[in-house]
Length: 88
Image (tube, rainbow, N blue to C red; front, side):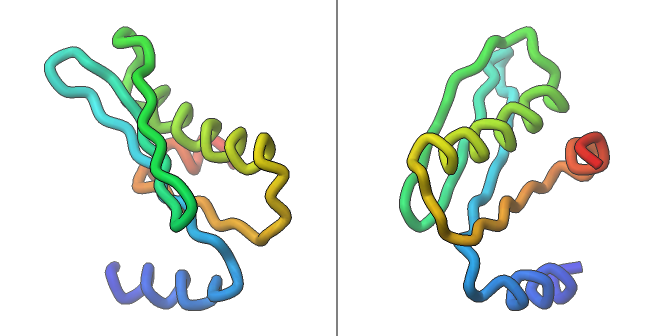
C-alpha cells in the first residue's frame, strides 16, 4: 500500500500536496490541513461524526486554495476512503 501511495504521489511532482485529517479525542473534534505553505488546525462542532469531520477537512482545504487565489496544481491527500468515495 505504501509503495502504491508513493507511486501515485510521484506522478504529482508538479503539484502542491495538501494533506487533510480529522480526529475526535475526548469528545473534542478537529481537523487539520497541511501543505508546504501552511498548517491549519480548526476546531469544529463536537457532535460531528468522524466522517463529517473528514469531509470538513477536505472542504477546508478547497476553501483555503480558493481564498488564497492560488493557481498551482494541487493534490489533496486524505486517509478517509469513505469520504473520498462519498465525494465521487
